[in-house]
Length: 149
Image (cartoon, rainbow, N blue to C red; front, side, top):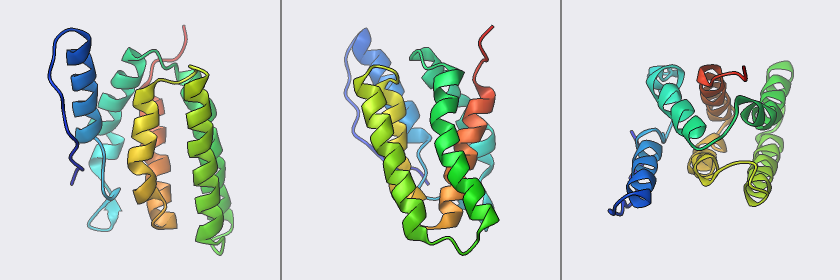
């Protein structure tokens, strides 16, 4: 189940932007689970498409990793302390979004990554399980990005 967003047509740069919007739309989920288990797409096809999109927009695995590590640390805290309140997880998620907005303004990350994050906040904040699904999706994307040579 993917969300739907408006697309605009055009040529050249507009086509690239439309392609990016389509890829974002097709790889945005309302839940990271299917039948009680993490969706195959977050590990495979969607992760691969998102990795290509981010790389095509000059996002390095290193800059991705530095942002990912923030949420990965929270996911590890949840695993170590299952009683951690969802409110604490949400606070860290919101800090992550704020950091992404700041890094976008500094031109460290491109708008596509910021949109990807914002598209998934509503899902990731629903429960600790959905938050974990988002972290797993990010981990799968990072694994598919090319490391610096």
